[in-house]
Structures are given as C-alpha cells and as structure tokens.
Length: 171
Image (cartoon, rainbow, N blue to C red; front, side, top):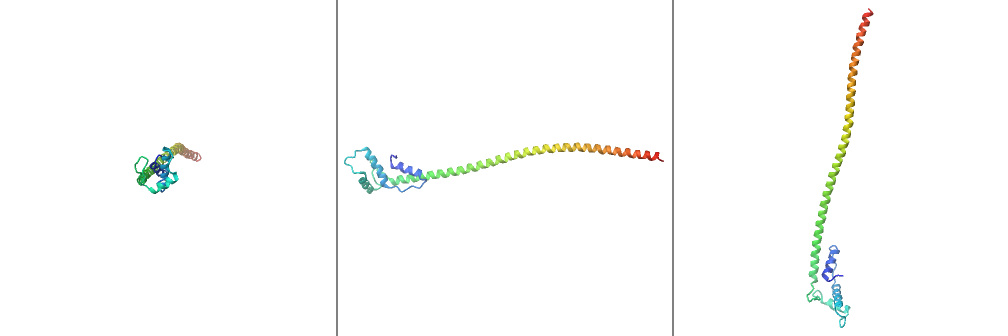
C-alpha cells in the first residue's frame, strides 16, 4: 500500500488529526522484508519471523534496500512538522471562515433592514394615500359646512326681516 515508511508516516500524520501513534520498528521492518521477499528469491533466506527478530534488534539505524540508512526519527520529526503546518493552516482557515461568516451575517442583517425599510415605505405610502383621501374628504366637508353656515346665516337674516314685516303689519 505504501512504497516506503516515510509515506506511511505521512499518511498516518494526515489521518490522525495530529495524534501520531507510536511507530513500532517491527511494523516498518515487516514492510522492508515484504519488499525484499518480492524482489529476491526465498532460497537460503531466513523466514520473515526470524528475520523480524534479527531486524528488531538493529533498531532505527538500519540500512535501506538502496544502501542508505533510514532515519525513522527524522522522518517522524518531519511528519510532526508537516502536521504542525497543517494544523496552523487549519486554524487560519477556521479564522477565515469565522470572519467570512460574520461578514455574511452583517450583509444579511443589512438586507433585512433594507427590506424592512422598503416594507415600511410601502406601508407608509399606503397610509399616506389613505390620509390624503381623508384630507380630501374633510376639505369637501369643510366647503359644504361653510356653504351651510352662509346659507343658515342668510336664512336667519330673512327670518329676521320677515318677523319685522309681520310685526309692522300687525300694528
């Protein structure tokens, strides 16, 4: 599945959310043995079990297939560094997300206020129209009332004149 131990360590670092398990040398040695088994014939070689016992006694200073020593501590530290970088990026991304969500919330609130204002304006326009109608009706009533008052005054004057004429005729 993984061509070398470093890739396995990187895979574990990516998928364990920063909590790396203790790496056992036996598991890494087994990977090395399986590569050797597949590339060379099994004649004259020790069995994987006895080979594993022999290899586990060698520890982290083993020699890889190509002749270079594998430094598992260094690979582990690199994996930890990578993990820390990823954690930092994740935190930055979370902060960015929170900032964007707050900004989106402010925009939504502004739009809510704007739509609320437009609704209020629509209501105000309707109320204004109704009030204008009432004002118009009241002005009409005022005109009628003024006409009625003037007619009433004219009738009172006529009534007074008629009373004077009747009183002169009755003398």
